Amino acid sequence: MEARIIKDEKTNNIIFGYFDKIFKNDNYELLFNTKTGVEVLQEIIGNDDPFMTELPTMLDCGIMGHCKNNCEFCYQGDKYQENMKLEDFKQIIDELKYHTNQVALGGRGNPEDHENFEEILKYSRESGVVPNYTSAGNNITPEIVKISKKYCGAVAISFYDKPFTYKALDMFINGGVKTNIHLIYSSMSHDLAMRILNGEDVWNNKINLEKLNAIVFLLFKPKGKGANLPEWFPSKNQIKEFGELIGNAKTKFKIGADSCLINHVLKFANFSEQQRMSVDTCESGRMSVYITPDMKLVPCSFADHDKYGRDIKNHKIKEVWHNSEPFQKFREILKKNADCCPALY
Figure (spheres, one colour):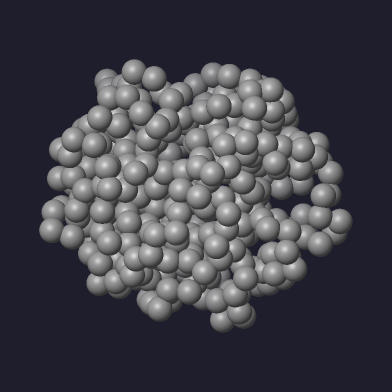
C-alpha cells in the first residue's frame, strides 16, 4: 500500500490517500485501492488529462451467453451463445491485469449461473483485477454469498420488486457483501426514481437502507427487445426533473448513474465540485470496454456486437483497442461531441 496525497485544486483539501495498485506511463498515472474501489486517473505534469488510456481501466465482460429470465426490456435481445470459456476469461485477464482495475461480470443471464463462476472470481481477484457482478437475484444461495464476499468488490441486484429481489438483497447485506441496487431509469420508473431521490422508503422496510451501499440508475436502452418499447425512453422533462434532484438526493445510501444516463442529466445537475470530479461522460472505447462471450472486443455492450466487435481470440486486445477502425471511429465521435452516444450513429 502506497500513500499518495491528492488534493482538490480549488479547495486544497486532501481527497484520497492510499493505493495498492499503481500504473504509470509518460502521460498519466492510474491509482487504485483494491479494498475500497477508489480509482484516480491523473495526468503527468506537462500533459493534458488523458482522453483515453493505454488499455481499459474497467472491463465489462460478458461471461454469460444466454439467459432464462426473458425480460421484456433486455437490450441484449434473445440471442443464444455458449457461455465464455474459462480459458478465454483467463486469457483476457492475463492480457489486461497490469492496467485494468475492475471487471464487471455480465452478459445474457445471471453470472452466478456460469459453470466456472467461482474459478472466474478467484482468478480475477488473485490477478489484481477486482470482480463485481449484477444478478437478477432469483437463484442466490448461501454459498454464492460466501464466494462473493471472499472475492468481489461489490454485487448489484437488478430491481424487479419481487420476493426474490428482497431475499437476495437481504442475503448479501447480512452476509457482509457491499451491495447495490441497479434500477432501470425509464419513463415507467421516473416517478419511483423521484420518490427515492426525495428520501422516501418506497420498499416499506423490506430493505435495510442503513446498510445498502448504493442505488445505481441505468438508462433504459432502446436496443434488442427494448427497441419494441420506444415509449419507455424518458422524456426531456423527466430527465430535467431527475437531473435537478440527483445531486441533492435525500437518501441514506449513495446514488450512482451509468454514463449513458449522466450524459443526459449533466446539464441539469447541481453537482458539487467534488461530485463533478467523479463524473465523466461516455468512457466507452476510451477507458472501458465490453467483451462478448465469443471473444469480440466491443466499445460498449450497447453497441452492435457484429458491427463494432473485433476478434480477440486470435488478436491481442491492445492491438484491437488502439488500431481497429470501430474503436477509432467511436473516439472521433466522442471527441467532437462528448455528450452523445456513438453507438446510435
